[in-house]
Length: 201
Image (cartoon, rainbow, N blue to C red; front, top):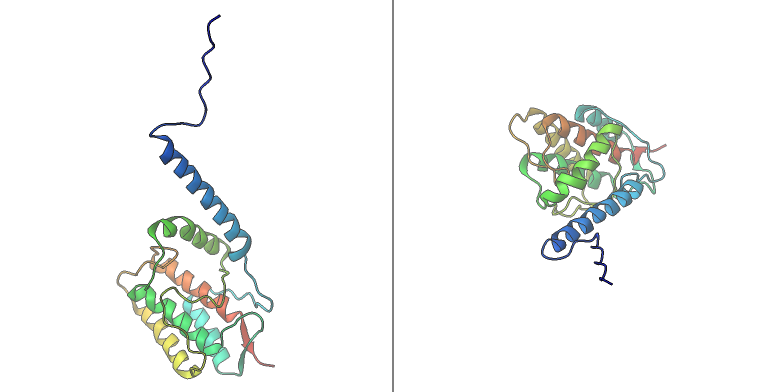
């Protein structure tokens, strides 16, 4: 009786198998990270979050000025940073969009997870992120710094961004953004941080 030929496996073998397996592992990794991000980081919402929403940087700066003109205070445990640290952090983000971010994520990250995160934030009109996470490569934030210089720095950064007509630098996580997209990104970033502060009662 003739031997029955064995059925070929559905899993490829040989020289082409390794790249395909690597691709499948990479795809599964992206899915896992995406699920984790969607369930945690992207939906991160601390207690006492005011859930502010701004359409423009100018709108956000009006809230900055309102808070700065009064006795502003953090809404614990919404943020681990004080007022001056938060202002400098937000100024850094705007400045780097004009000058270049010091430690950007890889192009692969920007074009996949980063772009997906920005799309999600943009669609819902609000971002969510760890409010004590510094910009990669940025100088450490001084917890003892005075609020007035920090406020002046943020004002200048916002003014410089509004007046800028040249090319913008890729966001460290989102990648290349248009001026309108950066306007929204900065407005959402400011809203997320300012939601953790209010006028002390």
